[in-house]
Amino acid sequence: MKTQKIIYYVITGLFTALMLFSAGMYFFKNADIVKGFTNFGYPTYIIYPLGIAKILGLITIWQTKYKTIKEWAYAGFFFNVILAFFAHYMIGDGEQRGAIMALVLLLGSYYFGKKSASI
Image 1 (tube, rainbow, N blue to C red):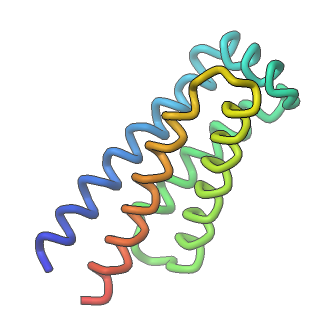
Image 2 (cartoon, rainbow, N blue to C red):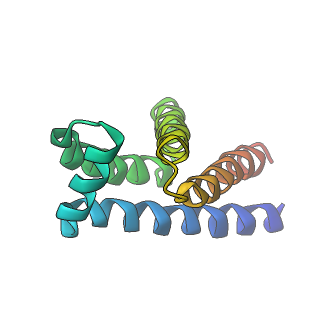
């Protein structure tokens, strides 16, 4: 029981750090991100809203009051990570490992969060 909560906090903390790094890049290394989004064929006007959405999603994942919104935040991150994986894979830049790591951490956070909440 306690071990599962510790695992949840460690995995969710690592996922949070990864997403904060990602969102930080959107705001502080914007020129690099614009190049990447252009290579992907994505519109660059979504960079700032996506960065804000990641931060809000992290806040939502850490809160414990609104379970339904938390589920939606996990779903949003799931789609974001899957799309990031395929975007990197399709252009062949070799950066899809970060998306795989994010997916593993996200699924672990979700699984252990459910497991520790049911005990």
